[in-house]
Length: 181
Image (cartoon, rainbow, N blue to C red):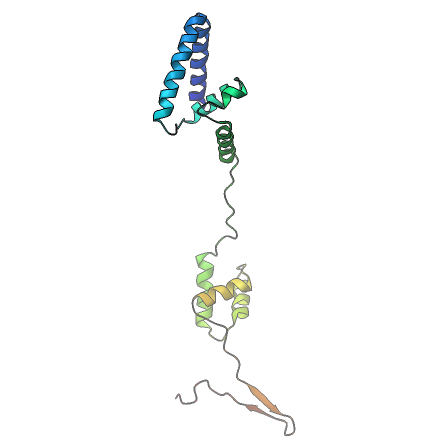
């Protein structure tokens, strides 16, 4: 892109040097012809689409003419500012932050395996065991992974009641399914 811009600039410089050697009458006639052609083209074309080197050259040359002439160009000052904003946006973009990295499948599989093979363990126990095995994972992550596969919290322990007067302990829930074998 830089090579193309340099080439375009060099061509324009040579064209200006050639133009300086011409007579004033020839220059005025050419200006009138070009203005008329431009008026005809403006009637036919709704929106020109210059590429990047054309935009850069137009932006530089527009600075050299008066304010009254700037308003009649195919490129308005607002368009020049928009081009500049786009160039700055392309130059100074940063990739969007993705947040925390995803949990590796190996650790996810371990958490699910611990939860399935030990149905009486809760989230805290699965978290503790995974930490003991050397994996850094938070309790909230363990809870989220187990809930995602349909494993809720560990079942409640069987309720135990103590009769204070008789000083006896009654185990009220011996089995979860009393009619089962």
